[in-house]
Length: 433
Ligand code: AMP
View: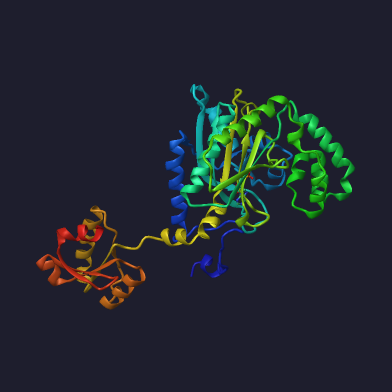
């Protein structure tokens, strides 16, 4: 016996915070992905696929060295030459890196890009929070017009209504810009310095290093402090205020939505340093009190420069697919509509001699678009019929000497047992119709 067989006995399992998406669930994921491809194209977005690992510095510079993501949550590895790479914790930085690297800014029009893919963060796993999770994201690069924001909201609203999802709340805020935010941050740090006693240890650290993040803390005692802090939206400059008001004005143009309500949320901030002006989230109470954010996004006008590119304004969002699937799979119609496909036709051969004939027939039928199923295990006819039931095949056809010689086949409809005698050429039309 080889050594590895003797010693390897422990069952290897998936890593905590990661998960398999199995047949039976994956159909719903595919449906969501199809909706993204179809709908986002209507708004002029093209898909972009970037690597899942990048130079660590890309994330440190863009997301911010003092953010929780970069400080604690990135999976970083060092190669043999001492270079550091990180698994991407989010998609925007990579898209902007690629936009610069391939000079996509040469187009006159704003560049609209979207992605679907896995992200990695070392977070404490719980329902709706994983270490490998998937995001659908979209970015508009090359425009700072507030109508961009409103069009993105329109697209998201349409996306959710196509998926029959309701009960969503859009929360919007402005987090100012590089001109007005420093003065607000100074004021915030001063306030926080006076309120240290009421803060959790993490927020005591944040209050100096990344003060805006205090607003995101879920600890009860911090909530009392947060309620007394000045709101950033009350301290933004005239340009930021006008931008925000125009965004709200364009939002008013959108048709009344049954899917989503909208309100200002003065305490909404984002956990990444690159956001300026508009910040938004879409939340669902059905996700529970702590992980209720389904979408997070905002404007990042200085990000391109931060990663060494030309000035390029930007706006985008990321939507957590696991949380979306969690919401959708709570819906009865989604569960029943998106299950693994069942065979159209199960070909049961009477003895092994007819396996080859069945394979040939199956090949022919697949060429005509029929999901034809042949079992290879040389089971009895009875066992094959049982299997056809288990697989929920729509039709069963027995393949034996008689059938092959005469070229006529009995097709049994599994639902009600109705039988039809068909010539070989007519099987596909009968089954597919
Ligand atoms: P963020 O990039 O943190 O703004 O996240 C955007 C969206 O991605 C969130 O609203 C969630 O839906 C989703 N998300 C973020 N982190 C996780 C995670 N660890 N597990 C599952 N989904 C996540």
